[in-house]
Length: 405
Image (tube, rainbow, N blue to C red; front, top):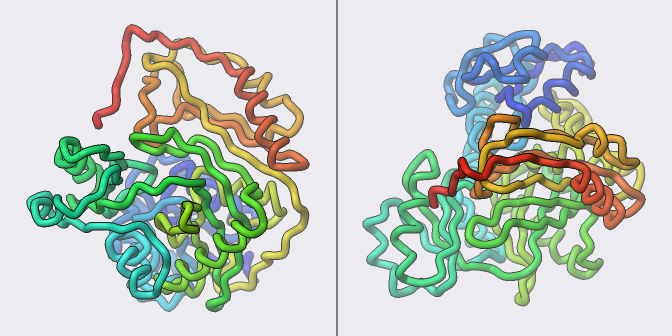
């Protein structure tokens, strides 16, 4: 029985907290591995391992010591390698280590798309900035530069002309664990993500999510909503491409989050993660719009159990992130008022009084969020907007901060 099993959650931050809490509710014994003993999820766990989430051998040893029946993480990319490494050695349900590499290295990922005929932007991979001279004349502007191994929009830059190229690439190269950079076509269109569970090589699409970003130069995501409003024909093409992308990198069991741009030439894959979507898309928006408990499904699958992926209803859900002027946050009012609006599911600040409100250069710069559910996606988005109008931020603009890009 699932309640008699043990689960190791790799990561103890607020991103992994839904899995930790859900596993406890399911009756599992839960261990958390994180380098930070003060991570929010540690206090919920039965056992704690002081191990970095990217320490592959360390995570394996933790899983072995805990006698884990399953190992998982949520909403973050690089720990996927440690999860797959541990599961392969222990014979547990997960993706292969090869798939983990293809899902976390943007260069290996796009090569896999090439090999399987998955539509994607043109690209050049630079392992070192000194390689730039060999491809400079081939680049078409505008284009995008981003690290090969980062997430959360870190290091993503729009490059408008040759004069911006070297400086932008140098910036991107400092934002990943390694210095490798990928230069890609700047695609114009409507951006979506596709939330997926793969069970025994069968791909189940749970939702297609519309998103809004800050736009150039860093494209940080500020709003997500389900279901997509792009129309049945477009959504079907997006779904078909997402399935091809997931199979191209070899995901046979586990969740996936596929980001796609609907361009004038049709949908193209931006990138994917062999994990649940971040930004509360999979943990909150999927169950609010479909009734599918995706976190439970991921835990069940990791522990070798059957999964329930049957939709229970068809509603709208949305998350909108909070931003503010540049400066120091002096006071925050209206959170209680916002949370009492009918349809609001959660209101939370990610930055507190005394902290900096920055230019939004990556997902860590966002100040907070509002999540809502409504009879339709438009109503859910309107509920979020109403809640945001209730929140009053007092910011001392004399003490500002700018993005380092």
